[in-house]
Image (cartoon, rainbow, N blue to C red; front, top):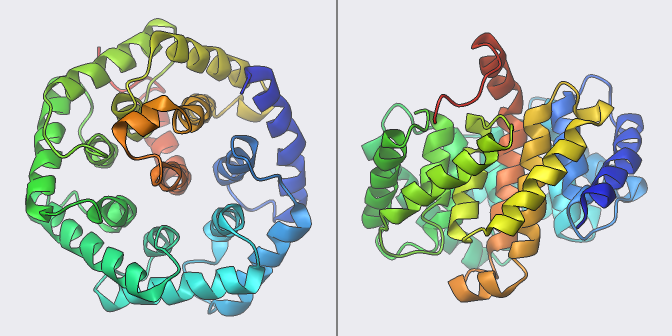
Length: 329
């Protein structure tokens, strides 16, 4: 999708979102929601989204994590994934209950993880169990770093792990390698170490080098790469991004950064630009070659959700450190 078209979509969708939801919703969340439709295939329909949001509110308790800041985000993720507001809401709570029974805490992240589970109960339970096994292994290696914000990728990646312990070991190795390449340690780097394992059974030392090179290319174009971008860079590494695609990321990021919408949220402009290219890469020969085309839409939805839920904290951390990049070279 061309940069101008993406810009026009944001300009058309964002005002409708502000009319639909309270002004108290963080702008980063609304920008993430706008991106779900601006970068995706499903057309934005305010009436349909409102129906899903109302169904969620009706189904949830007063103090449910689904309410508040992330209520519109969950509604948009569900709306983008299917049809039928009541059914989508019921399915979400049924799948989240499966996760809760397995020991996942009742937080916004367990609901985000629930959006990735299939609707069929037996399959949903199987993938939830696999996700819990992987999460527990991740927790053993990073006791204090691993928390509920890792639920989404644990559920997503758990189903591809024949041996959760071995997959968690690979994640840990990538985490250490990426630190050596100048990526800032923390939650975002852990997410990156998770995404970089996707679709690949064996450890590849070259992946960390490639990820560093991709970051370097973006920074050489004057873009500020921050920890919030790490998981997306991991996916670009998985999909063997080419220079022409990096050029398009740069063009789109700069086009969006010039918009009033992104004036104070330029890190989200780069996120959107990366995702726009990833969305196209997942439908082409690269996805078929890696063999993960069937699941990659879920990867991107998880990426959007996690970035939205952590965006405010990441931006605060960045501003407190002077608004710079990630500290890498």
